[in-house]
Length: 306
Figure 1: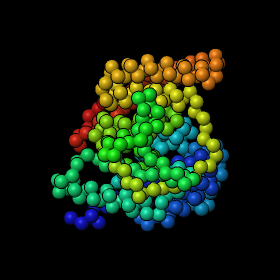
Figure 2: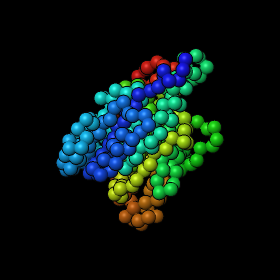
Figure 3: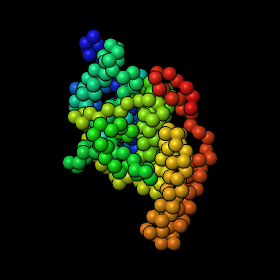
Figure 4: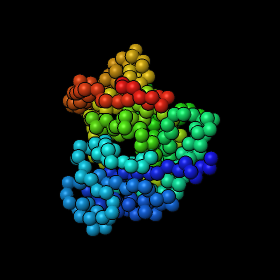
């Protein structure tokens, strides 16, 4: 069966906040793609009407959604119910789509579909991630350290459990069962989701180094502070206890992570660091007490509540 009959369709989901010029650049890059997106969606978390007015005047054919204004994870989740493509790419208003990015990913997914149909390849869902280029630097997926910091390089052939979000294409089917955890800050919602779908859901993440998008930094990102620290601890604890099912490791991690957080805050800020640590501990406790997310394990093509 020729690969051309197995080509995927792409929903391109763009999150934006108070950056109409960057959104315009992202949309133009989508229109210049060698493989046109099947669907374009914009979710707008702006605090003014500039982006809405630009969309109505310049891009009336692009579906525009008011964002929930509860952070990046909620903004991405806003678009999940209306995705119509077989696969989805999440971008933001600082991302420029590579001209051949979708084409390269489509060809890889088509090859994988053929192998699955003839029974010579894996039957698990494929996620394709490529690099992000910024100021001459190439951003690759990083492996989390024991304490949960995404700071380690993968060894050759090692299973990937993380992605570069704005250069990653997911099967849309995946998001019928999972979503980004809106409680988590500092990008740990993405780390948590990738861990979930690989370790608990049986998905594969494949590195495609030639499929790159560009990241053009705008304003300085907001410092998530203690929220990011609590998110790191929670996401790592959740990975050890729920996805890897290693409760002893999770308990040891929690003790060491709290001690490390306290020591780091005291080292940075002296006695005032105790206040920051308490804020982290309160946020972590709130995460642990909140109801568990609804999720579905998708191993071997079956669905079961987790």
